[in-house]
Length: 189
Image (tube, one colour):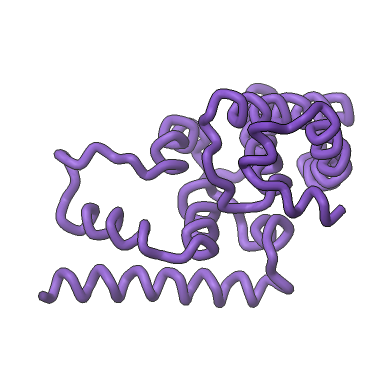
């Protein structure tokens, strides 16, 4: 198990079939257990996992995945969650009344890279972009999952390196406070 957790992008780029098989096998059950909460048929869950794994593999091969800000499991589950939401939306199943998947899907490329067109941004948006980049990887990942990807505290707990929901809430609050303080300092100077 530790072998999978220590895999780097470089390992993936020169990865052998056995490395990718190891990743596939080690993440399959985690994904299935995660996806069962959405009350889909097992066949649909397995299809979603296979599709998510293919997206992960293609992102590595095509050079779209250049750094891992989370574990491979979190990355694959994140992709799979979008696929599950798409499937549920097509089947008219409820996800969350406040969750608008079309907004997230349209903004996903922007969110994952934060390469935003700068000509239309307000001063506050420019500062948000600038200071977000300066946050630690754990803060960036946590805020992205919660605010941009629509994950709940419980989802983040299951995907991340947190002990309980209160730790996630506290970490999110600290990260957001840091970001707000940095932006406010710039606006006041």
